[in-house]
Length: 410
Ligand code: HEC
Ligand code: HEC
Image (cartoon, rainbow, N blue to C red; front, side):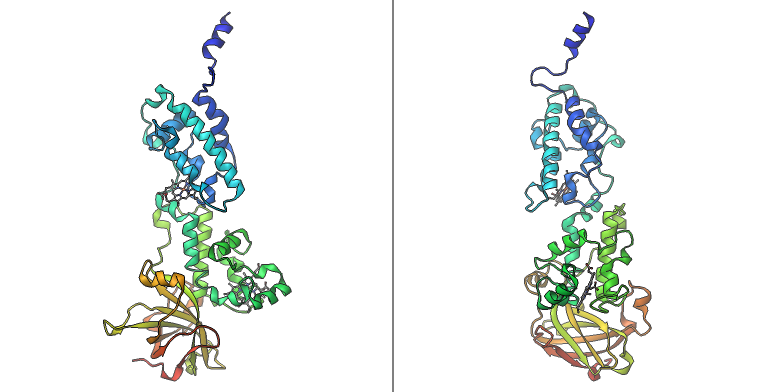
């Protein structure tokens, strides 16, 4: 008798109605306990996961979401937590696995939030204490930095901008590349013809970046020829190419290992945007003191309104001087303030207008870059300058040439 009354009174399902606790146990708790990452990883490499918002009980989880403004009590289907889950829906080319996860998460949360919002007592329960709220452990700045689209931006500004130092051999489909693929296999084509996003994705899935010891990444050791490289020496420790790649792999490793704890740990935002080109600058007849040393060249544009050279270099490059041939030559990387008219134009096509320019040379006399890859060449390393007028054509066969004998201190 007693048992029957008990069952009738406490049977939680009446018709279609399901209690929040039941939905939670059946559908939300498994997400919480699952060792698999949520659909958020499609875009967030670290810093946030759906699990961060879930507490062990239905009630606490709901109140925690409610108190953070992530639930719309009157229009549960408009809740911000559902919008966060749905973020990746519009993304084309999203992995099927993310899609499947997302649909499961979305349906589970929708059913559970609807059940919670229908429960008067739960809706009106007192607020949790601040320390009881379940939320991502990282600050908004860290969450932002660890987003894939942000990573792509920094990749475009570093590895991709320096691509002309490697592309002749490594870009999918070029004549040289096809030859090298025939000899070494498809792995030579790690620069993807589809662009920076496809290249980044390939590198993230490859073994070329060592996220445990970034400095040991093949992406660095191969071009240094520290691990035997079919292309020979293409980087010197501390040169512009090495710096760009090294900064990128260091940052990437810290992101995926969740090593950024606060905004203060994040790398400084780059003040300039970099654009790779196939514009070659050659200094012929280099002075004997430059022989077999690293020389960096900065190019300054003429500002006709101010009647002066611009203060920031518009382009730069660096390389070890070939002492035997008294020769310095390399491709220019252009640089512009992010968001400026120049930066916008160069996104479509990176080129330098015909005109008068100042070429300044800096010599790494005692190998300071090799000792500390983060070191910069500056005023103390300045060895001379020369004016040049050029339309800056592109291609190995059309170099802009400066006579080394004319590179003098003013
Ligand atoms: C398709 C990519 C994508 C997916 C998937 C995605 N997000 Fe986001 N997320 C973004 C973008 C872009 C922003 C910044 C713009 C914005 O706030 O709308 C962002 C911002 C955020 C923020 C705010 C931080 C800030 O910058 O103010 C949080 C918190 C967040 N997402 C959590 C999540 C959670 C939790 C999931 C998984 C349930 C998720 N996101 C899934 C792209 C995504
Ligand atoms: C003159 C042609 C040439 C140039 C230029 C060149 N490489 Fe290579 N690279 C090769 C060849 C050939 C291989 C395949 C043989 C080997 O592994 O060394 C290779 C292999 C690699 C690999 C290993 C790929 C893998 O999946 O095993 C990496 C990483 C690499 N190069 C990085 C670079 C970087 C970075 C640059 C530019 C700074 C560069 N290379 C410039 C010819 C070149």
